[in-house]
Length: 179
Image (cartoon, rainbow, N blue to C red):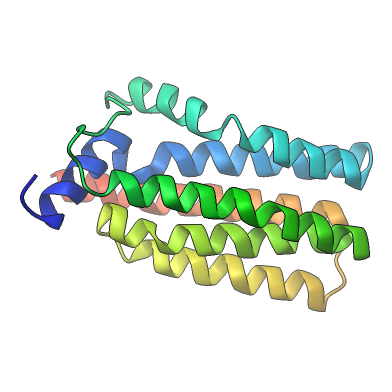
């Protein structure tokens, strides 16, 4: 790879502009919100943490279903950013858990802030500023959930719905750019 443009093109091609990952993540959030509503907030929290472990493998399956490889080229210099962003996110989960120990309703808003930070890097990974907009919406929703003193499950459902809406937006932008 000789340029960032080529590296971003490889990422967009391999991972369909990130759409499968956003779908996988949004689905995990929806399930976590439902579990928090039907069972307990702690069960919903654990569902998101453990469901989050499945996001990448599920997204690769979705990539393949969408006719993409789900694997970037070995020499792609952006691969390290993707891995570093993942580790940053994983290292931030204890902060959200700590917030939940103070007040359980803070877990999902804290996690929304964590993934908002992670999605900021996706502009560089995929060359799409829509991820900056996505991050702002996630962060603002986290603030709104705290301000409104929303029940725990609402954070899971809000995060999931927002991710699935942005997955659709990103998908539509991606197919429009193909034409």
